[in-house]
Picture 1 (cartoon, rainbow over the protein chains, first blue to last red):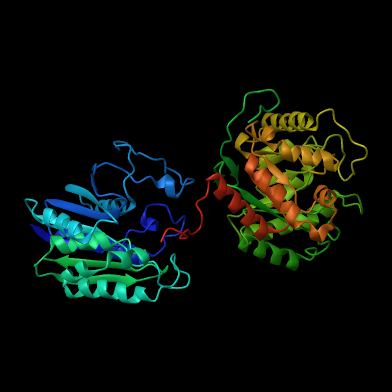
Picture 2 (cartoon, rainbow over the protein chains, first blue to last red; picture 1 turned 90 degrees about the vertical axis):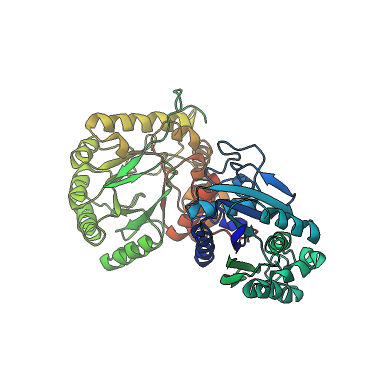
Length: 233
Length: 299
């Protein structure tokens, strides 16, 4: 039974140390932490962390992101921390796991990646499987909006991005998560919106539920749409 | 890393200046403040005390870790006796110490009488650019609890220019002389963590020698003594690039980068902000300083 959910973006710059000496986007970090803290306060027996990645898989609890792949010169960034499986954890799940750590969550967690190419029905089905897990389950969903929101955006400006990201924000804000299942996978790919598949897992997990949402952050400081939200079910 | 003078490479340790402790990864800018009317670069610019104090404010704002106050130019010229040198520097050291209680202050002098006065006024380090010419200097430095720079000048006397100098192996000479001076300082009672060695570019050297000691600076670093380099706008840069004083910054910063890469820790400089940027860049390339703010391709 899903009791609560949270939504957070997963740019690599949220990983420890990657922005150098500066703490970039403190308000985004605070929003993510608040959302994670909300989840923990709901008293889950399991937190399922769902994030976009190259493949759909369940990950070892102790797997580590290979920070050195992003920041080879970063002190302590050597791959495969103690207890790691050797295969590098996707960034999205690393960001989610770190949020749970920072929120002081020490309970059970399930790390579930979903391929960016996963079709909508497969995503919804993954969500239903999570909803069918026994006990009190909280969902932490990591996903980013379009990366084409300005001339300096990673994917340059695409006029369709505002509409795409606006629809995601509206669905989350109103709790009408079914609308996320209507997101066009091809458009999401063109807009470099990494979160599409993970959002559709969320929609599948909370299918037909009444959801009360709070938007904690909604902005695009680097041309990528970031959305942080807390959801009560 | 190659051996220092035939011995095993020694690790760099903590460097102490006054109350400060600097770890080996810290690259320090030593800002030049001359109380002279006739130093080789920007001659007379800080001859007036108020102008000199203005420069102190500026170099500290620009990121200087150490202020190096000198009262006698390196080149030959008008005689500056002990009394005149003390008059130019000791009171000014005291004034800087009063305004900046914690900044590290260095005094550029080879004379023990001057060292005694400036240390009493608050200097933390005696930058003896003339290779231990005054044998009484280390004892005075030790008694004051200050630090000492041990520089290589070959066979030069203070305020003389090198003429037809040659060395079978200039770096071997640098290693021998600086380590001998460092050992002498230890014997005199100077704390080991307050001793620095300096190849002294252009002092007792032609341009070829200065290029060679830059290239082989790692051999000095391997001795374990912290290495200071004084490169700023010197003639070896000018001759290498065939450029006048005012156009030597790029060459200076290149030599600064390479020296930092090879392990030098203190950089005596006129252009403090540019040197600070250069050293920060090298430290980040070496992995010893995180970049200031990285978001490119991480959003």
